[in-house]
Length: 342
Image (cartoon, rainbow, N blue to C red; front, side, top):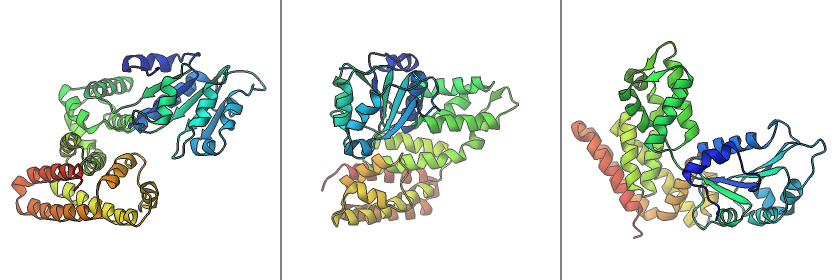
């Protein structure tokens, strides 16, 4: 089994092993997945902008035409040089195409597969982890230590230092998506341009935009039944300045949305199709947890959650001094209810 450990990933991406020509990059952190895929492509071809050097394929298309991947991977380029194939996984099974390319002798060609959060035992993940000529690279949300290093590296590149209290305030507002974290740090660096260091006031001045991200993550974690994440995301939202009334209000809007779409599912529409029909469209970053929620909740149970959240919305207005505790309790109650089946 070839699944890289955390300590081995960066070294492999910087200097990919030619003997392992097929690389699967997967995980819940879509930004980190994309970042690592792009780094692998840059390390595998001389010019990523050359369409003869880099071929982009869609997994759903390969599901209909598995032989195409082998044909592309074994094609000898007219002008020589290294080639890479970048595949974006979709909803259809294209494992037969991957298995065929794993059995083929590849020369100066790397196949990089970009996928979402694949559970242990998923067919695509199994195929790549078990093959000698492949490697699987998981991409999970950055821990606090990783975020601290990311903050320091990005700000140092911008010619800035950061005070310890500013770093401590910033860390809870990041994570979940590497690309979004880099964007927040870049925004902070731009705001602090001309200073020697970033202060806590700078973080608080630009943190309002981060509150929406923190709130989405909190609501999605609650309805997916992830109580531990709810506590962490609630703290992020609080630091971002999100009012308890806004938190409960967002949860109410989400339960109404989930209830409407759950009714269509109980009418015979598959979960994946129901998600595609949602208006406004669901951001790809939120889809896995929302899909999980739609599978766990019934319309009847969502109606009960709607009533409980309406009561909480009234309570946070009646008791401003206790509003934060009431909102947090409401989110944890939703998470607990999400894990029940009755």
